[in-house]
Length: 327
Image (cartoon, rainbow, N blue to C red; front, side):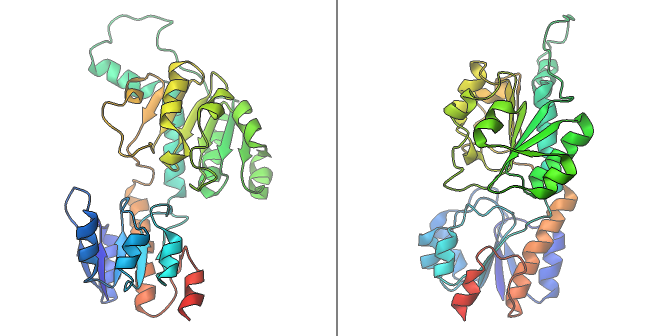
């Protein structure tokens, strides 16, 4: 089997592929792949290992129906038309579970940084403004005993809630497609409606999957229902929030601030006004960016490919129905 990898993969994944006798080629440039050129390249390979936000749509799969597998170096798969992949009998794999802790760490970091204006004050020093002490200037807000609202109480949401509960004794409320008994028993979390989540959260952290239902759900109307002292955190997908509405909400004092590891669109322009706001902290989609987590992700994505090469089902398949269609 020949596999094309769209970024430089951590060595842990490369070793697994090589040990399985799989031939690989890695895209090593630092610019996005041209769509037509990418499709042309794919004609010479049996499978893809996708790292980065490479879009695989109906058109792509119609031009590459020969592919035996697509393995994603991510837990999210909104960049892939799953229905189209299934139509062309191509299994799509991803890397669930292994990045929960690292992503929750990032959400926690952004929550604390936004509450204390940390990124802004770092720039304050770089701009040579640290001269005169003023007791009422550049004050943040404390998190002790506040309420954390989780939108999407899955594995990452659970990890974030545990950290907030342990560090700051925060009360946990959440909104989910269904109730999470583990969160309720372990953290005394309380299931609430989306309206109640907006109204009661001092910090609202988004961890839901992107879908037609959740796309743009944090918009002008949603921010208007939040507390003026509240912080919005998004480490899931940028499209969950309307960035124009978020910017306006912070500018007008409708909410306190935001911590973003994902933006809408991505990448964010260096001239985006959010980057100048004291109560906003932005990272360039770094949620899983630890040595340990990226190595674990590389292993899972490689194992997905190896399974297909050995005539087996991927251990982590998004579109499991594809196997029934193949038979």
